Length: 155
Image (cartoon, rainbow, N blue to C red):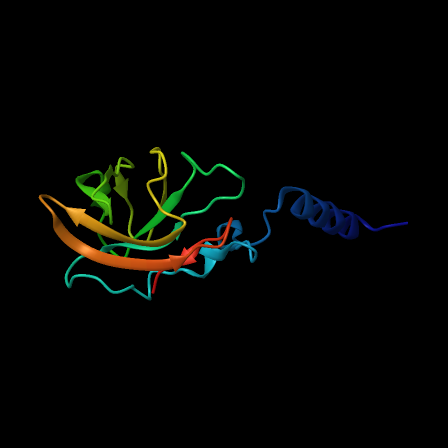
């Protein structure tokens, strides 16, 4: 027969297991998520004194038709300031423009933009430009071949 303090200990252990409240659940990282490796401490190349960067792209989502499902991942690298990303846009090598509409990012926050245009990103051999204002380019990236369903991490 269990003693009173042993019963309380078991009830606490079971509750902790069921509710996942032991420890900080915000630090759990999905190790199969390729975007989990991107942090606020390693900024990709771009214009000096700009904090918003493209950190990953997925030009070729899984499936035979990737229209309206391509994605671009942005990161606010400023550790103390929010950035209004709706003031930015992305241009591709064909001069097409995609307006960002996600609003504000908190410090070190990743924002995934699902491209709602028909084939904005080519599956191979394209360039992208992160711009602000009238063609003020903050970042240029180029890529060759995209792998279906995979994110390309920008360094």
